[in-house]
Length: 285
Image 1 (cartoon, one colour):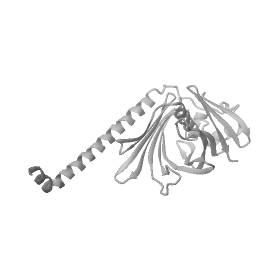
Image 2 (cartoon, helix red, strand yellow):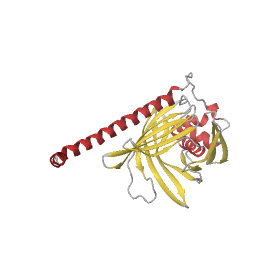
Image 3 (cartoon, helix red, strand yellow):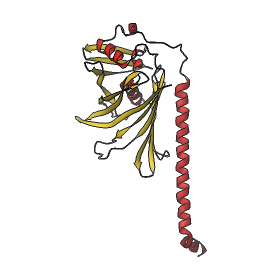
Image 4 (spheres, one colour):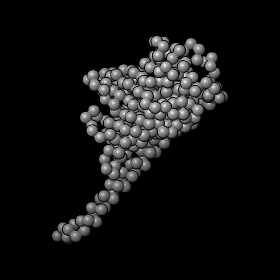
């Protein structure tokens, strides 16, 4: 009887206590997730080799397909130091399913190692009222990791390194190369001429080889890229056409870099544009 009386008269205090505990739990989960991201950022960047500044000269473009040379000149790489690492701040619109009506509004940070392909991308995605969904993609030493958590606590995706994930992660690095264009001159890249306005970029790293077609305009700017890439990582997954379309340019750190970019998958013959992003800040670090 005493317990019943307590519950009846003080239920609101108990409810507030439960809500408070849930709130604290999610705060702790967010702190834990942010610490993990900080550790991974340090891990990704700490192995950056110290090089004497290497300024790119015109002669380094010799032998590349003509449209690639023109793109690199237009991007402003001549006379610039090679990018070793970079931080990109992003915002935009995202759909996780073709049937989804409403565009989500993500905020993301991307850290990239350019001397050796690697990156850490973490995103805050407002999907649930009062609770953000937090995701991270890590590619380091040729291995990919993908994680998505509700409120930084409840895991809904937690994929570790496997052949398909690793290949897809390296494909992502290749497709995002125009944001750090000096990577086109690194030893892991080779280029094949196709015609006056396109070329194939081939990237080999840690035993993985991926490629993509790059299409350029008459002014030398990149217009779009196309490749076959794994969207899923399960046993039944097959490579699907993946298309990157440049929607705008902006100057960052003296480089002319795409700042608006759409990513589209072809699914059952139909285009599904899942991410319309804006690079609004780029820092060479």
